[in-house]
Length: 352
Image (cartoon, rainbow, N blue to C red; front, side, top):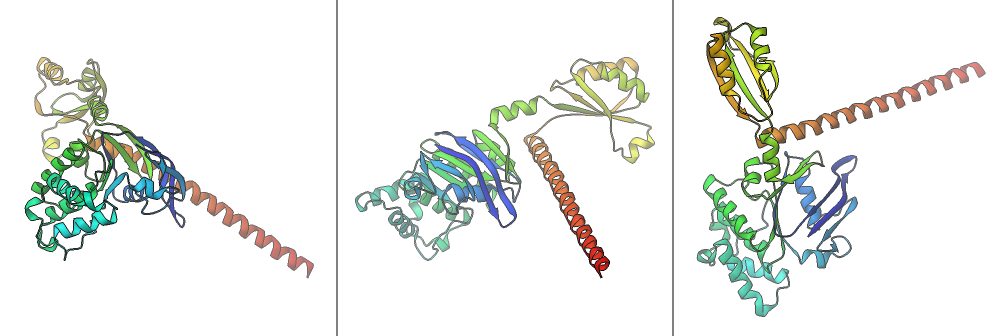
């Protein structure tokens, strides 16, 4: 189990991680999702003890990563975004070296390496130099290093970055396989990666946790919002009022953008927002009854991308608001200092 409380990381005046708190239970795949620069890698580096926090605590199976680093790190296998591989070594030599660093007893070392290689599909390339392997296989070597000694927690930072589609599918399968015996935590800025493999998702923006929920609940949140875009030839206000009276319709908005063909055909376009219900049949019925020709009808539900953009946009707006307040305060202080200096100069002239 991992318990993070009030985690802060500052670099000078820059706050990379801003009071993060969360709790990760055993036996699940957790996804850290956020745009580039959100603070995901910094958080993972603190969770693994690679860098220390400015404030806050991180408990790994009850061990404080700062006060009890050796005990906490024994519970963790870590794959950074760029695996630290020695490419002049063979796969076996590198894993043997990693096993020694992890203090795996000599009697258990060979068995531990074989288990890691079987789990990650590396047995056939055990004697090959790492520099002669494809990027996908190098990533597998990084995975094997992380699972050596069977730690309870596996932390993966951007595990599929730079891989081709086939390699990504292979790594996804590997992550799901690892989750059968480990708690897996992975970070990514790629939405499809997180939604494809994770049980729970934590969304981070500007160093803050803006959402934390199961993939299922986020999907339910997405299902609660839908939109029907329609282009018709009809009296604008009459059509708008007719659609607004339909059951499940939350709002009827006139489309802000219209192409030249729509203008030429004298069409009216609407965005019909609903509570998640599909109202296409009801809208079609109204148009048929009123003899309003339909030129286009497009139904869509909110996607994970929409949820992500909404959450991170709200946080960005808050950041911009706070920046404006800070800027105004700094200007007020500067103005007060200038006024104070001017008054002081006036007093000096009066004394002369």
